[in-house]
Image (tube, rainbow, N blue to C red; front, side):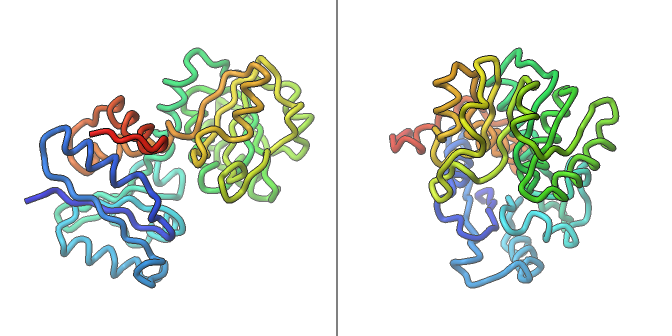
Length: 285
């Protein structure tokens, strides 16, 4: 019997998650089937989540990854949540086991592990984060878990930045977390920049802040990975900044989900190589 898992979300046909999971399963010598359950393709909506979860259980799936627009909507239909998923109020990984549904959030760990590996020795005294949406919640939790001492959150919707700052202040009382509105003022005195908005994606090109606010002493981390080199990363590199692309978060959240679904540790380097090959159009067996 093959091990089976899947991804539920809308507009997910271009996702690299299935290939990362299945190639790693093949490399470890077991039959692993990973399917896309695209709400757009099956003409379903968030309201259909209970039926989709039940169907997955009946078909013997060991787990489901959850993406937009279902990360919060899935919560009422789960039996238990991990500490991180409860704190973040969002689930991207559901383990189906013995008629119970366990919700996890591997997004934050994915960002944290990518940051730890990609920017070793980064100055964690202070950072500005642009974006307080679903991805921003995960990146804020991650960077504060790594020991960041001061975080300023800025969002186009000030109330969203204020809400995230308040929540993180409770979870990380030893850190200083504030909502900001003036990007230029906030950037003058920080060691790092975390970008957690869609700006820079193929469908949303551009810069999330003026390029002249980037200084050579900054560490700049990005969540966007379509394309791998965003305008932000390109400008940051030209100015001598240390940079981290969004691919690490995508890969390492999958590394942890693989472990939860299969009970086996993934080879992170191998999964990263699979991801990079897929992004560049190269074939990798």
